[in-house]
Length: 62
Figure (cartoon, rainbow, N blue to C red):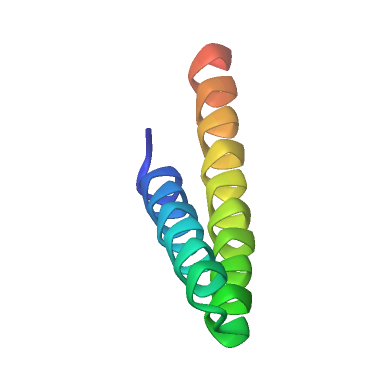
């Protein structure tokens, strides 16, 4: 796993926690913050996945 993949997964986990806490306490803002964190984390992980795929293809070509 590369740096973006790790950071993305970590952000998704933080988002899930914030969403759960927000839902449990009735704090809509925290719940939305968790949703946003999950989306950002997912995007960052996909960026890391793309970089890893490109790196693998370059390595394969050489």
